[in-house]
Length: 233
Image (cartoon, rainbow, N blue to C red; front, side, top):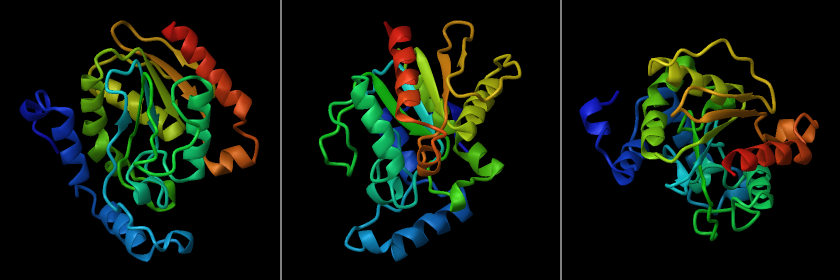
């Protein structure tokens, strides 16, 4: 999918340009464009982003948060990860309580949100049908996450939100020759790797399904960020 000689030297701007113009997955291209065309009634006056979504946040961050993919009417509408839907409401409010964000809401790209010492991304950059990207679609996107990891040189902690993000990050490490043992997905789990690899923290995804059923509570998410704050000192 990508030329290693190019990606080793590209800047943030060049990387984001590649992400935004990517059409590697025909199924995802068709779906995100169809959602942007038909819209949800509540957002009929919006001009949907309808393209792959790059990561955002502090480019000198020590914490990287990895989610699943843009929400169909969230980031696919607003053009910013975890922005404009309930998952974003939950995550950004938790980041605000933990001191990683200047405000507790994330509604649109120009809402004044600033992240402190954290960068947010995802393993897949286009909204997938039923939030289920195929294995090949995840592989097609993996190079973008790999390059973000390279550019985030001060990185000390990776927080994986949900099982797909967890497995996607571990697959990337294995592709890079890291001897990754069999690890279980468990909320609040902490996994250490040999330096200079960052510590991996695991959380349930802050989806509406998880928060409304009580599988993920505010206190549980706050505990995760308290653990991260201690790791970062």
